[in-house]
Each structure stands twice: as structure tokens, then as C-alpha cells.
Image 1: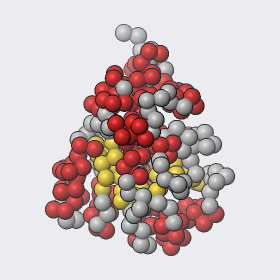
Image 2: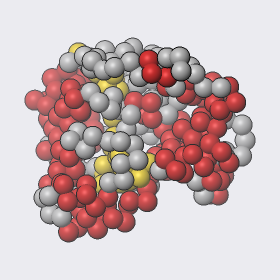
Image 3: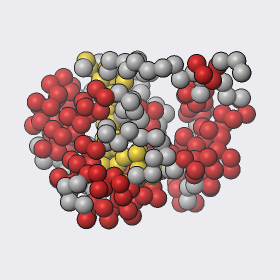
Image 4: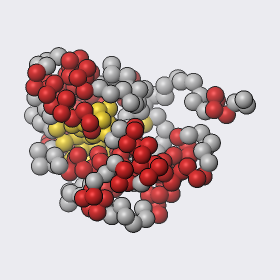
Length: 274
């Protein structure tokens, strides 16, 4: 693991990230002073999951007690997730079985240790994602298909999205679909991504008084395009990216570089002639 700092980083947190899980006291000091922390991921990168878990575990073992919001649990699962945390004891598999939806095709081996950590220290788990079905409804019919009127008003979603956000999310959508999408499909898919980010931000805002950490893909936690754009708190969040490639300079406060995973080209089958 290597660390590439950005300009805005507090020096105390730089030393913690460089030292990894061995620097628990300094890590706890850095995180406990922050109401909202966002930690990204490359979904199938084992090293990234291990490094992120080490940072989170070190902080919790040193005394930090955040709620843990997870992209992997859809919001409809929150009642089942809360009940499972109460009845499953130290059994992380019991919690996951009660609340998983698998709409994202998640590999739960990566997330079981996080759930186990939450159970061991009695940390609330928060279902932070809009379901795939609701996101599809937003893409077709707009934000009211999945977000309530109060959230739409609070985030001014009856107005056009900021130009830089719409353009940046549009490029991300095109890249994520191998630049094969028709232009007409892009605005709806941008709205679906924004709806997810807005809901995640609302979840975090509701927990900032006790401290909260969001675990989600790097695209969601990006400071320039993702959840931080929609947070309402006065204090800025702390945003940590776990990346295989260089992101824009303004995307993260801290950047941990990961060795790229060897994987098939996801665009090869889509681009092949039929």
C-alpha cells in the first residue's frame, strides 16, 4: 500500500494512514474529531477491503464508536437489519442473511468482517443505498419516484443539477457503460446516481451527532461529484479513497493506492459484433 496525499490533509491523519493499523491512537484522534467519514472502495479489490478494515478497526479499538452506513444494504432492509443486530449476537452471517438483498451482486466475504466489527462493539449498521429498482424508477420518472418531497426540496432537486456535477456524473456514466450508451439514456442514469448519493447523504446527516462512517464505492464518496456535495452539516467530512487509478485531484482528502486486480475487460463482450 502507498499513500498519495492531497493538499487539504491534516498532518496527523497522514501519519496514521502511512502507519496503518499500528497507529491506533493517532487514528482515533483524527477520526473522533470528525463527525462524518467516507471511505471508498473498489468493489472487487481484496487489498482495498483489507486496508480499509484495518483503518476502521484501529479507530474503533481505540475508542471511536460511529454508526456504520453501508452501500451494500438497501434502505428497505433497515428494519430487518436493526432487528438482526439485536438478536444475532456475534454472528455476522446471521445479520447478513437477515438483511441482504444482493441487488448489487455483492461478494459478502468482503463485508462480513465489517458486520462482525459492528456486532462486537454494538455499532449501528445503516442501510445506505437506494435499491436498483428505485434507481431505475428515478432514471425513467425523475427524483419523486424514489425520494420524498422534503429531501427533494432540501437539495433543490426541482432545479437543474449544477453544471459541473451533471457533466462529471455524465462522463462517469458513459465510462461505466463502456461509452456505448445512447446520449438520451445518460441524463436519467445521472439522476439515478444522484438519487443514491442524496439518500446516502441524508443517512449520514441523521447520524452526524454521534459520528458516522460511510462505506461505499469510490464514485459515491468522491468529494467533487458524490455524497459530500449533498451533505448539509457545517463541518466538512473526511473523505478517503481506495483506488487503483489516479482520480481527479479534488476527489478525495486522502488517497490510498491499491495494486490493480486482474479482471476480464468488462467492455469486450459489449463491444463485440453480434
